[in-house]
Amino acid sequence: MIQVIDLHKSFNGQKVLDGANLTIPTGRITVVIGKSGVGKSVLLKHIIGLVKPDRGQILVDGVDIATLRGRSLRDFKKHFAVLFQGGALFDSLNVFENIAFPLREKTSLPEAEIAQRVRLRLEQMHLTSEVETKFPDELSGGMKKRVALARAMIQEPEIILFDEPVTGLDPPMSNTVFHLIRQTHQDSGYTALVVAHDIPEVFTIADQVAMLHRGRIIAQGTPAEIQNHSDPMVQSFIKGEVDFLEG
Amino acid sequence: MVSLIRKLGHRALNLVQESGSMTLFLLEGLALAFLPPFRPRRILQEIQLIGVKSTLIILLTAAFTGMVLALQGYYTLKKYGSEGALGSAVALSLIREMGPVLTGIMVSARAGSAVTAEIGIMRITEQLDALDTMAVNPMQYVVMPKLIAGLIAVPLLTAIFDVTGILGGYLVGVMLLGVSSGSYFAGMVQSVVPLDINGGIVKSLVFGLTIILVACYKGYYTEHGAEGVSQATNQTVVLSAVLVLAWDYVLTSFFM
Image (cartoon, rainbow over all chains, first blue to last red; front, side):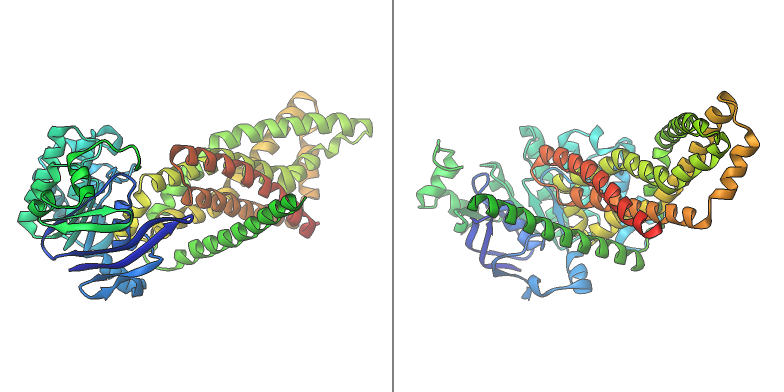
């Protein structure tokens, strides 16, 4: 279980997180929704330790990640994988090398075993072996996301964080990516945190939804509970009402 | 007046802060070279990118520099009837000053800018964050091999510059202007002492490290998207060229 407790973060004097509290249960898909620029990605980056909080705690199975250093921090990161907004595939490596990268870096598996695992993941993402030798700039947005998901899955992590997994994709490809997330989750049972603002598609994959607004989680519950939530801000966001006041 | 002093104070503080931060960045990058994994393949890749790919531009710059030095030197020396000293004049100018400095400036323009752009793009597209989340230290995977490659490649490029420049000088001095081939090389052998060569090597080591340090640092801390990468690249070329010239003065004063 991941617990975000009273998290505060400011950048250049501007408050982004202002006492955020969130519980992410093990083995479930938790989706954090909220307007663009509200701090969803910042929250996600705190959980993997890419951003240090000004105040507050992040507990992963009871361990405060701020206290981890050196080897213990590296070991902790082995349990995680992140699917970044743009995929964050390495430009200088082809698709095969990108997916194989975590295995080559962090394990001593023989090349034949690595190749087998990479091909299995490509198959799982419905990608043909022809893409193996392509470089990231030769791939479409949807393919990049699927390759990035294959790379995230390759080490069979216990926790996967998805940062806006379908941003910039057309509706069929968005549905494909959401379908793959749901399918891989069913197969592997990992804990997932998905940061997104794609309503209503996110409700189809979520076990739990939380809404971030003005640096705080203002609502948390099942998709049905959030859809029927009494908070006008939650309803306004879900219905996609016109809003000129907020960014 | 007060605001002017405040601005100057801010600038000075920023300069001190950035120098300190750059020094820590360098120390971390170099220290990681002694910790596993050692990444010899990454170092070789970077030597190819920083060194091998700069060879053509170094050959061209060196050949023309040597030719101009011979041309200028010949007409100056001729006034005193000392055309025989042309070889030593060309060789000393190249080995002591022109070789390391021009190699440094050309490497900063070609490889330094490329290094900053590469790391800057990795930063804004979250590739550095991706390395971090995979428990791969981006300083060790990206920065360290480039620093080591700079230390190896720039002295070698400087040596290529010196030799090519001397041959360029030979082409103009001996083959075009008629200076005796024997005196061109004999003068060189007599006047160039080990201290000159050592001085050139030390300079090229310092310049190589400085250029790649600035390039990596500016790229690593790039912000604000594509415009940020463009600004960082620009700053790398300007700052590393200025630092090469400043270091040149400091090191020359030690070796004189």
